Length: 245
Image (cartoon, rainbow, N blue to C red; front, side, top):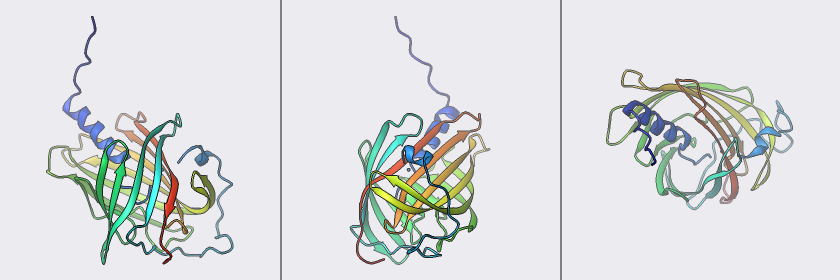
């Protein structure tokens, strides 16, 4: 005789769904492998040939990146995605994400590569993962309301973040070896329905100028009970960008 586990309470089910959203944020910038643990050390000044300040890239229709998503604890592959710029406008980019498991997802980003929407989730304002031009020692903060459409209870999330540019690091991923700017982001979040769901997250992003995107991203989520719920890496496998910088 086998038993069936009792269904999750609405609160716990909602928490899981929100954590899935946090762990699968839009991936115009995307997370890595064991290379995260084997860096050569931060450099406070850019290596020869790289600018002191990194400006926002100018993307083109057809620019494309492929990433693999893995568990940072086991190294096992969770998913794969192809990310492609489908339209360029004055205010930002339309992006097509094609996930191995979930299929096609439409996303939008502002001109600073910050996510505005993905699927049926909308961010207001854009989640400020970047604040171009980027320079070592730069810091910024922001508050974002992320909501699901159509609206439902416990489906609106307030995220408060602080970010800093730590320095340059040499990073090796499947797509090659890159000298990248490392950005650390600390996030506190809660739902807007009497704060029934809350917690904190940490992101580390490695942005490479020649890729015009992340080459590596690491995110860890801790819900209100303090138990780690997600530890995910996404690593660049390949990329194709136009000649214009």
